[in-house]
Length: 117
Image 1 (tube, helix red, strand yellow):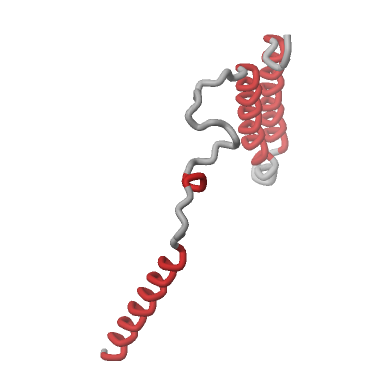
Image 2 (tube, rainbow, N blue to C red):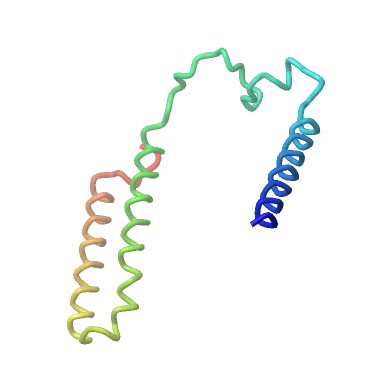
């Protein structure tokens, strides 16, 4: 029992010393106003945060995200081929791809994929 208590106390003392030494060594002693200010990639951080944003770019990004999610839904189709019949697998995959192609055609027909008018 004494050995366990001794081990725990030594472990606590060593870990506390290491944390104190690390915090003392990690402190920055030079306080610079430029280093303490937020980094804004060369822009004035006190300027206007409302900049014009291209709605076309947002639409293309959302379409890409939708198709990316659909691809992740399509990938497990290859792993279930051994658990289902070929006919069921082919019909399910064909219907899913047909829905994707119809959605792509609709977006193309509406002009959502054209960057500039």
